[in-house]
Length: 454
Image: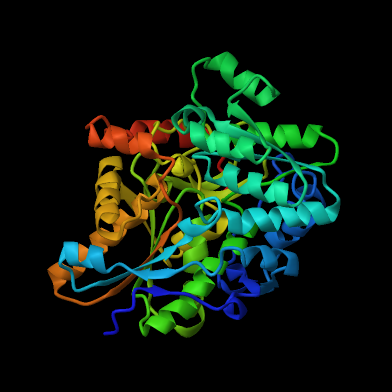
């Protein structure tokens, strides 16, 4: 086999359309509901929180292909295509017959895949005449991406950063502030949602659900302001499909095709971005690619959650979504993969999981850092703790191929670098990190509170 290691596309080969998998799904996701009426959310109701173009994309179940605006494509050209890389060093270390490829999204200006949707959403807000936007961020990857995008389109941005990450990852906060964003540790005393949470639990270190509540509240109470989300919703995953669409062409350049596609999983945008373009061939052509979503064992909504309508945030400001969930008031462990500490899965992924078209995989924290360290030593890239879950899953699959004596092609998304996560690596190398076991009774107590609409 040709020993070429990296595969790039030319500027003219960068995708001009995003892929909307819902149009090709036999079983469409159940509709989001207005929490007051329990009726399907309307476009006008969506636009109270989100810009209109993204709301239209969110509710679009018929168009498989959505044109990428020229202004967004021009900004994509600053860093796209991202390389597809054959991980020869990792293969050798594992002594596996598997061929391992990774799509390296860590080369974007802010170091992760999040910019793919941040640029699109900031563009649509600017085009609509919005002047201010709000958002949440877990580990800070989304917040840094949106800070960059907001500055590119002249928007003012307020970011509610999960408090534990605000302190764990101070340099992500610094990046956001350098780009001109206001960053608030969540829960905070600046919103009613934050005040209510801190009144009950003054030492609460936050969750993505809490930060979303605060960002939505601020957006709805600020003139000419919209809320912008970094994962979970359909339109966010739509924008991320540029990853998989590029990877398709690059795998063809490598002369191979993936048998298994892997992405880490928080709300679903990264996993969907790498997976959905390939999954369309399973849906439409009968191919048999395996899709694995790698989540933290301490936040196992895909493998141990229930499928039910739930809020996307802790205070109940968002529409109710049909999702695999641990309950919107679930309080996650303080793991370093802050971007994966979310209670629920997006509606598309939830339906695909329900239909058996993909699988969830739980990865303990120590296994993820062991995999990340091996990857760094063999491939020269220190991965984000979130991406480490995908690497650990790829290693499991490569070892399985070795045990079975079979050659298989493994593709995973390296969704971000870990150069601003070195505190976590310091703790791992010192032996100070632990695994978190989530008791069944904790999950049951949370999901039992949900209104049973399904």
